[in-house]
Length: 484
Image (cartoon, rainbow, N blue to C red; front, side, top):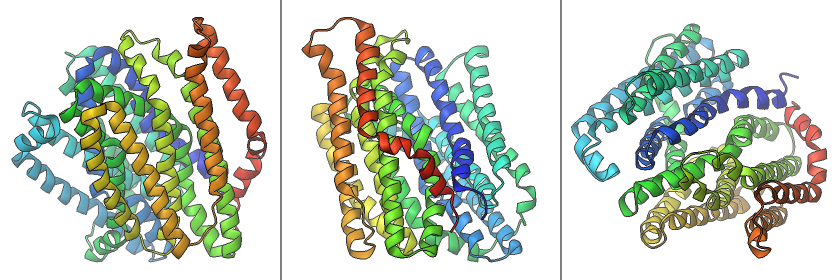
């Protein structure tokens, strides 16, 4: 019955990763053209715009999906889509005005001086532009218009790449011009999204719609913003307590680590929410728990496998850059991939708060973790620099998993095989350790052996240990795609 969710995994997942992939493809150009310190500033700019997006978005794609599934009727759905669009325009203009008034103070706070006043306005505009993009894509997702969804993402990526490449190679190169490239491509993308969804807008404003999106979306939006800050906000502390170079290095490390997200996580989480909501309504809790546990374990194995492949072969790519200062990031990537996994595991385990309509629980947890994150970053970064930021990120993501697990045990007792997860993490850590220590122990100097043969052997060991999961991939995807 209906479309296969495994097909959705590929279709919508492919659409979702395009924008991130485009940014990643632009990365080598930025690294070659920008000074390390300049790239650190660009990193803080993009993180700031993403924080604006997460803070004010009300998790609108899921809000649209939920409202459409609750059967209010096509007429009301169109009014609420219009309401969301007009609401974000009004709120966006208001905060652009606020940013303009306080731009000097915000520049001092974020960048450490007042030389970046105009950057403040630009990242606020970019943040709200991305919200409007997510709204238009959310409507296409809710209507199950997969071809239009992917096509709109492709067009947006073309805008981003074409405008930035033109600015980099055919204009006077400057960091501020790159930022304007993001703004222009974002605004053009908003207009294109409106054209794609022209018949989905009624152009009426209903406070009932705002209340609905606030009721379910605001706690998730706060939680999403804090979660994003927990994982990326260390740039601000490094900017103030360390150097712009350290900001650049940790940003590159995180981008390499995020390859797993591009290849797997984004697509998986796109289909995970509708999958578990549908499954919960169709089967017994025992059956639900059994299937969810298998899915989480299988996902964890594939996440660690992809992460391991990236760790094993990352230095091959980095060695192509002319600035060999970037080679130092290889030592940080394993910690960040493990931290990212714990963050995704936390996101999966919060399904109970969504099913029980207690999304504020996720918000409370992330607020608590957020306070610990600030303290940890301030203390550890002053003493350990980048490692201080990474240690803080790793520990707070682990704490998040522990807290949500305790909550689930009391309120939503889905049984997750944490012993298998701990064993998997242990294998992952040992193989990563072996990658870096074997050449040192045996005093190896041959780059082909160090960068190719040893990594291949270690990846093969992981595959042998978890070969049953890989062999069962087809049946796992089929299970994802079944509609009960």
